Amino acid sequence: MPWYPGSGDRHPLAPARPAARPVGRRAVLLGAAGTVLGAAGCSGGSTSPRTTSSPAPSPHTTSPATAALPRTTRWRPDGNDIDGDVKLRAVQLIEVIGTWSAGQGGAARAGARVAALGLPSGLVQQAGPLLPTADQAALQVIEAQYGGILADSASVLVVCRQWTANGSSVVAGGTTVDVRLSRAQPRWTVTALHPARPGSAAASLPGDAHRVLAHSRIELPPDAVADVRSGTIHESVLRAILQLAGAYRMYVSVIRSGHPIDVFGTTRPSDHPRGRAFDVWQINGHAVVDAATSRSLIETFMRDAAAAGSYNVGGPVLLSGGATPDQFFSDDTHHDHVHIGFSS
Image (cartoon, rainbow, N blue to C red; front, side):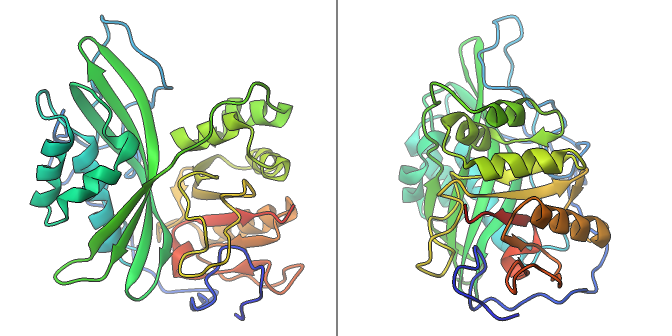
């Protein structure tokens, strides 16, 4: 498929994905060894391979009687990922920085954990909100999706929740980190971390923002919630999310913060930082990247996104029949999520 100027988040050099691709069954590695993530480790299986089995609490401080770090699971790539090891490399780094037991907090100890992965310990200086002052911390990766992948470089957006404990109190929060990687031997290496920095909550919000935050069929990770609360999300995005929620249960991965400023590998601004795009990684409980997820479900969702006003819909399936030549696109970056962008 040809690239046209202004075609949203598609990279101009990225090969278009075919309308249909032979895929195998999903290979999920969660829980196979029964490992447990405690304050510094992981827990058993979950109802969804990519999320914790514990209900995700909203940010708050619990009472001393209930204070306890939740059990979490290690995230594992899907067998249908373009390059699962790139994602795994990024996720392992975020997990070891953002998880520690009593007495193991601080940048120095985090640097030692990072060095044990064979990565530069100095990366902890870029960890930002992943390293708050706390006695203990537990981190759950919700999803890792590509912000971009080329032959020798990649961006992996690691979306996570984090719980920190100080004494008898637990605070729930989380962030999204744009992890930059470059190809190396024997494994890809991490070159930089760009944690999300959503804006402060606005004094007042439009009605659609309140409806998005309250809707039972819309799942938002911490930074996406903060984005909506900041009042920086364009009304067209809010309306489209609500319209799609009338027919689907959606798990949004990224709206504004945490996404690369430019379309990865280019100098062309992405629609995300302008509050004019959102990504969906799970539809009706099915991960977009999962080979077992119905292609017709994804195709219908993409077409409904276009009908909701998106000029630029990307995903794992290349669709025809758009209102413009570049309304639909597909490439390796969008093999694991559906991108929905707006021009106004």
